[in-house]
Structures are given as C-alpha cells and as structure tokens.
Length: 177
Image 1: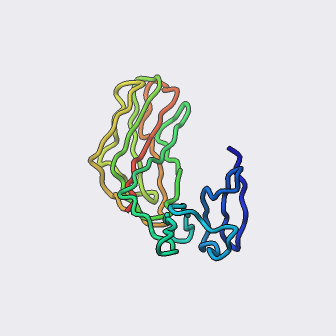
Image 2: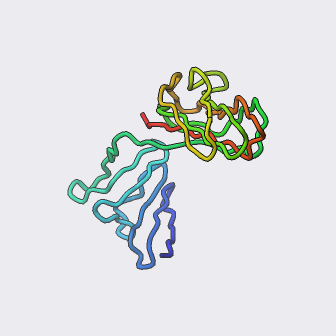
Image 3: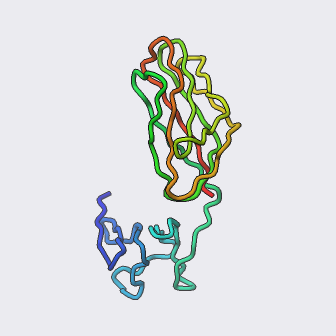
C-alpha cells in the first residue's frame, strides 16, 4: 500500500491510495472542519507535544485520548568483541517510564557480566548480571533506581568479558508511567 502525506498547518495526515485517512501526527490537531481531511470514526492521531494517542469520535466531533494501559518497551544495544569495563550511552528518555527488567546475552567467550544505569551513575542492578551460558538470554527483575523522567539517559554496561566473547547484548525493559 502506498501512502501519501499532506501537511495541514503543523499536522501531517497520511492517506492510502484511495485518499482515505490512515493516520496523522503533529503538535496540533488538523482543522477538522476541512471536509477534505475530516477523519473517519476511530481514526488515530499522534499528538507529538503531549506524546499521546488520540482517536476521532464522530458523535462528539472531537479527539479523545486513548488509554492504552501500561505500555512496555525495550531499549538496548549489542557490542561486538567487547573489552571491559565498557559503558555506552544508548537512549534519552522522551517521557516518564520505569525500569522493570535487565537482560543480557553473550555469543562465544567464557563469560561476561552486564548492568545498565541511569544518568551515568544510578545502576539498575545491585550487582552485575552474570551471563554464565552462551547463546541464552538471562534476566534479572530485581531492579533499583528505576524511575526515568523526560531527558534521563540510559547506559548499558559490560562490567566483565572473559574468553573473548564475539558479542554481548544488554536489553532493558521499561513500562511507560
């Protein structure tokens, strides 16, 4: 399906090949009185300034915030042929969220330990997670320093790397708050 986009003020509306509304985003809602872009019932809009989804309601002729429940997502990275210790900044939080789990994966070598931290100092695990088995995801859900706010940074950490692993991955699971 080929999508086209049309700018309406600060909002962008995507349409399919039949000209039907597919979705939209922007810091303001598009002018819904323009009959050329009036959305169908249930159409979605990503409000970039509020970082929230909205749905068009034909009955009220307005946008309604969509409650999606607790959204979980992962952020992480993979380091090839790591030497330890190594700290790599990988993400800046665009909204408030909470760490729920730290996982690690090792390819080759004889061992590695990993962690993650907020803003360069607040470690998420009290002690680094030991990746004792190669080619197996290992995880720890007993986390600390879990609260992120807009602008906080996430670093992945490779604390130790034994036997020259080919790669080590660190994955941090978050829940949007």
